[in-house]
Amino acid sequence: MQTELSKKLGIEHPVFGFTPFPAVAAAISRAGGFGVLGAVRYTAPDELKRDLDWLDAHVGDHPYGLDVVMPAKKVDGVTEADVEAMIPQEHRRFVQETLAEHGVPELDDGEASGWRITGWMEQVARGQLDVALDYPIKLLANALGSPPADVVARAHDHDVLVAALAGSARHARKHADAGIDIVVAQGYEAGGHTGEIASMVLTPEVVDAVDPLPVLAAGGIGSGRQVAAALALGAQGVWLGSVWLTTTEADLHSPALTRKLLAAGSGDTVRSRALTGKPARQLRTRWTDAWDDPAGPGTLPMPLQGLLVAEAVSRIQKHEVEPLLGTPVGQIVGRMNAERSVQEVFDELTRGFEQAIDRINRIAGR
Image 1 (cartoon, rainbow, N blue to C red):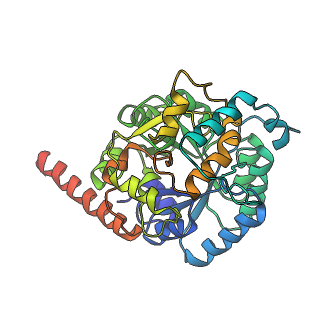
Image 2 (cartoon, rainbow, N blue to C red):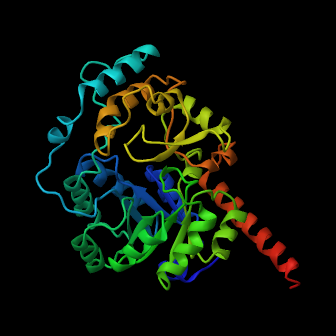
């Protein structure tokens, strides 16, 4: 399972694994793929440095990367307090009423929200980059598209490739014009922030739009057959995120959430603004239903929604309130029906890929 991109990066399989867990990222790289650590949850440089130290010590000689959430346009002087002040009281009341309706306990006195994500703020993301470039990362990915031009230039000065996610061919062409090295074509089926176009349609459109830049296919991929399909559509690799959530190396801190993921079918997700303010595919829960109900106040734009619900999400997760308990995940969750190690996932991917190629060769009479 080799492509020009996998050869360039010195990896055995063109499987790029996005994950918030250092242990999963290290295991992906050790298994012959390319682990990419998500940085958005790190609020302080020391936290990211601690986990990059661990990752660097456990990945061996294998390459790895970092995923940030950085807006393309630079915004100076906006603080977290400034953003907090924009949240209407009506929305704060709605959060408290929804939590009270389901009997969600408070956090302990002095306990901070563990889900308070501020990595979308430019100054935080740039601080993460300052830390990351002291490590031998080989890829910087940006979940919000092309990062600012000076960030692209800085990464290139450190011989780090830059990748950006795209939900349309138009977005992909903008990334190419911005000097991006790799475009991740993220389809409608994917977990987290997605566009409106399904992977089967999106991948070849993006491949044609940015040729000769390499494209990674994302969304609806969790088996070797699906990897083979992505490469047949012109992608030089695949970008997988959801499938790692139920691996034994993942650290969800919630047996109840793991049970929900293992039991979910491919129709049990919804593309909702409830979590961040942007459409993001996640498990459908009574929490997403409440926010998507026309009778409610409606969600706020990013980043207001994320700050608004941060403490609530932490309370729901800590106390494992199952009707409200969810997580970003793609439609591939329907295949995630057993806990496996990262290596076992790779074994299935490579075995299924070989079987798919053999099947196509028989059809072609080879």
